[in-house]
Length: 459
Image (cartoon, rainbow, N blue to C red):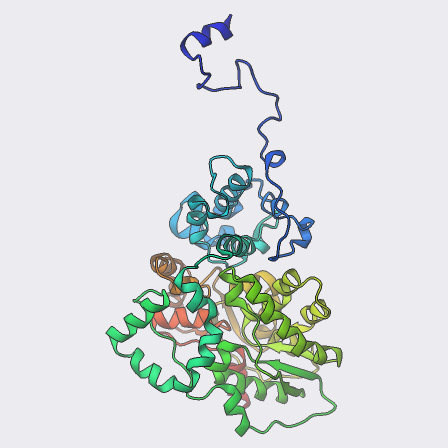
């Protein structure tokens, strides 16, 4: 009777269909069984999810830890949600958009669905969820895979060709560093260059080194220590072209610790900016070349030491996901260390620094390597350490891109910039290039890399 009565005023069954009157089976609308199966293509292997992107994205079951009210509650994730308080900017919200895309529900245009890209746009690719999410959601990887599948064979956003290929551009413009730096100080020209890059005009231009490390080191004599720990120092593109003094200090510190230091040659790149913009075939080519260069060192018993946390994290995690069949990739991933990880394991008594430090850990450092070793190492050096929990807001190319400036600044204001104001007596330590850039750009405060602090005392 009730069914016939409802049919009088709702003949098409539009109101609450399939629930009370003529109900569907209990399992009819479960998300997972109805999702399209997306196996790994030429992007990430998704080895932990049986090579299945669908399995990976359905790791999210809606726990909602990413929707923390404060950084203290949620750890490092999810910085854009803390800034906007919009569900779509949480890890869970982004996972839901991708799940709906795979399910063919309200998101119906596949990889190019505007709802998906709107949800992913403010993802900083900080990888914090890979560590903090109880179910192991890695939204940075999912975003990269989505961009890869969306733009295969298609024209990409301008920033993908500029910021996404920054290491290649640094090599090209390096010889003209003084000229580029001079032009970057002229406001109209700076804004024009940033616009051409797809970057926000309110940003400062990164300062190119007068000479990259690979030219400077020709004038630096290294002291061979045949009995010492064999170390191959991998100088990434950012350090090489933008902060070569950090690499010089790293050589000083490692040799003082008794290491036999070799510089990785030729110039190699981890492809980080290609990964973050979803240019995965190009990233694989870069990583294949990197494996060819580094594996002979690793096979000979060398430890690979990196200086840029995000680049180290790429070799520790993305390398084996992008090149699962590449001989030597797993061996390299196990042998790549941060400076603190290496020094903490050596029988060496470093100088007591006795400094009061405010530390901005790089998000990838926190998520992939963990920051505990660095913190304990600094405390053993007599340092009074305070940690700024959460992202600085720059997050590689994210904070530079047009449309992200306000969120990037809000993340910084709620995090590291607030800590700097509260602790004016502390020096700022930030191993990540993007972290140092954000702090200087927005606050004018200078920050240092760990090796710079130690090298100062050694000198």
